Length: 282
Ligand SMILES: NC(=O)c1ccc[n+]([C@@H]2O[C@H](COP(=O)([O-])OP(=O)(O)OC[C@H]3O[C@@H](n4cnc5c(N)ncnc54)[C@H](OP(=O)(O)O)[C@@H]3O)[C@@H](O)[C@H]2O)c1
Image (cartoon, rainbow, N blue to C red; front, top):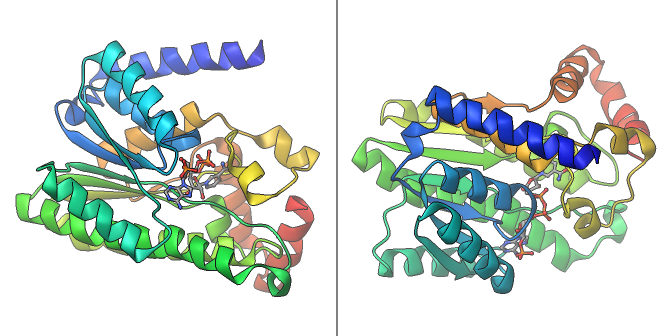
């Protein structure tokens, strides 16, 4: 029941934002969404298609992308291309770029969202899994932004959204490498926003807090009651992100509680950040 109410509330909010015309800037454009097979990425695909965007959906689970393609093409009369890809390696990233070029698709909006977490004590973690995480969360995100950002700069228009995390603002034991990848995304994204301004390319870094997706299952992370109580819906996260992106806002932290958390972290002595984060998260 609360879920249904929340969905209805978000639908109303989305409709209001559309009526205000904030999403008109995305109409008729083509958006590349990575990590579109679930969670925040799938919601980006839904909201952008509602705004009249054509889509290129990317993730490994092709069956899910095909279902989403059917849903969105039927509902909004837009065109959706599905490109299954494993983006945890540079090869996967380059193959994706080549496939998009071969199809002759011009990307106006890059939603650089695919990513995953991995919980555990650093010295016991699998090297292979860490390589995949750094490959996806950092390398692929960077090189997709480089390739499509360059093309957008030539056209003197475009939008890039990078998904970071509230975790980017603090070190956190047991998710040390994950949070560090997201800190990279935050610093990279804010600098890129400044660099690409002169080329009329808007760059937004999104820092969601805990969000109700498959993320925690994939990360192998059990949620404590405190974190459970703060979970946001992916729909709300996406509405706030697209509003920010349409305005070229450098940073979007969705939700009052997440904003207050980030603010609170500024006032904590540096030495306390890691122990406090561990206490809150685990
Ligand atoms: N949920 C949260 O609490 C939270 C908080 C802060 C930040 N974030 C960030 O939000 C982003 C989206 O995560 P989510 O919450 O929506 O989690 P999710 O539901 O697990 O979605 C992750 C997406 O990334 C894709 N992906 C994972 N590994 C991939 C690979 N090797 N190649 C290509 N695609 C891959 C997954 O698709 P396939 O498995 O089909 O490949 C899926 O579509 C991530 O960057 C995450 O770090 C999430």
